[in-house]
Image 1 (spheres, rainbow, N blue to C red):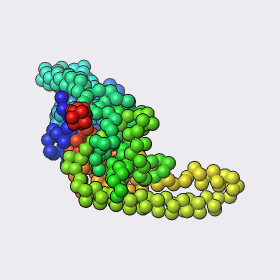
Image 2 (cartoon, rainbow, N blue to C red):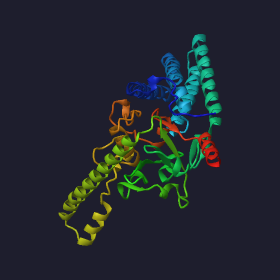
Image 3 (cartoon, one colour):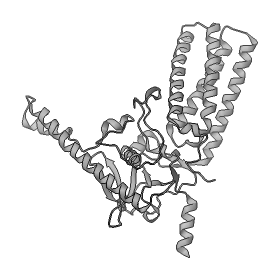
Image 4 (cartoon, rainbow, N blue to C red):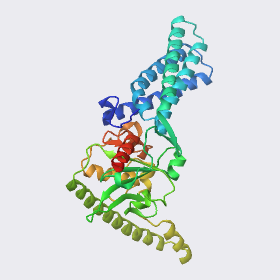
Length: 359
């Protein structure tokens, strides 16, 4: 079965207003759940508790049904799996609480049982959907993914997603991002940002060569860049690298001045300078969904370049309540598997390349 990230459930799910509405509704639902939990643990098993349970379960059921197609498609994202698993579990619990509350009205019982049946149906969809994905590294990817495609099939603007420590900690298949760019002499290079080096270029062979021991997957741009656009992207990336290095140099001067005024020995000052040394990596952006103007995370650098190139990628980092706060909403590389601006490089393409090579 073929998988294309551009095949969205509905176009509405690609808009920032959709994410804002969904996040706000989820937040309100969890606040209401806390209220019902308090009534339950204080033994207030009354009509308000049973009615609240069936109403909240119904609202979550409607919300989950709206999102279910999208969440099943983005199963590779651990947060998508949680967004399906948690409402199913809580919906079943709410149904059981409504049944045992001190309100024995048959309508309440009928609604609760009906809602529980729908939650079981959604769980069955979730389990059946699992067969469309395979485990790769620390998480799932679409079953027909071409893992570790060679450098000669990668094009300027392609996004490479790799394994690594972050992927391991998040139980994701990938946790780091790189972008393929072409230098003026025709060489393919990778553009990204590293915790120890900041924003930089490095040879594509470091990732696609035999010395690389991890795994990676890649996505083509749905609308590939022309030679002129590829050259423009490279120039923008060079400017970003220069800006990042300038910020890091200025930040290290500021840090050094702060440390100099401390009443401690030079040995400890040297240790502090080393500990707080700025490489140009956006540590704050690792945990929040922001994209700064002069320093970036790996995926943040790619997002910034795509935006400067006018690539219509999804809106990321909407944050708490979906209002653009960036709080608790880091930009995860795995989410780009479902971005409509890209197409996953799959096994059929490998077979096509092999056939051309053999011919």
